[in-house]
Length: 272
Image (tube, rainbow, N blue to C red; front, side):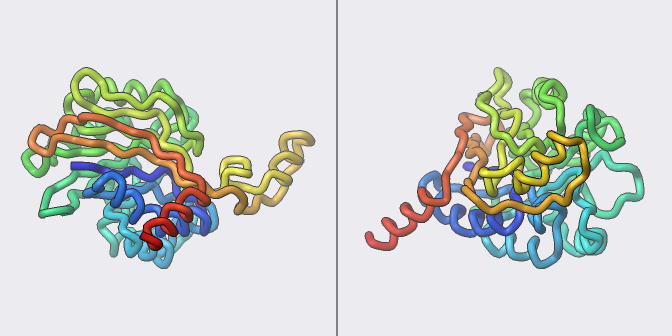
């Protein structure tokens, strides 16, 4: 089984890239399942029904989130109506939605997706390690291929989660920083890992936002209104090749495609 995990989808530029790039990834890699972190998909902060439905229609099978999941109030009701939209499973008891989902993908194969949030430099949540352990116990026997999105600030916390789950899940994928890291690898127990899958969105920016107001804030310390950027959109994520019988990852490959490369490949395919 090949799984495409798309790094944090940011605003309209990110959503447009998802629509354009999924067919290209399917053609190049033979992708069977697509997971995307979407907590910044609606104007750079949160998720709405319209943006979520559009991403699902583009070919995303499961949507994960993080600390911005409730930035758009309609997410509080949308998440109850759309089981493929997850929130971190270690949020306080009583939070709407769910943090795990088993999707049926190519040929009826099952893939489990867990969404968890770190605690270092992040909003208060329950213990992510205990939450993942409990979720895996509930999923036992339901699927062998399992992907965990750990939405966290600290690299050490993400790496600790990967070692904690090595040999127990197919992949542990870090999200949140919007900066793709160069440490993709398969751990000894067969779990694929990367500290951050990156950002699918505008890269001539400060992690997705227009540079001017944020530069002013850093230089002067004064508040300024942040606006989503649009320049230099790039599609980032990873492709994981896994043995669907055992759930062990065989490889993990980073993707970093500028919009121009995607457009050129689509044009070449059309000309062919």
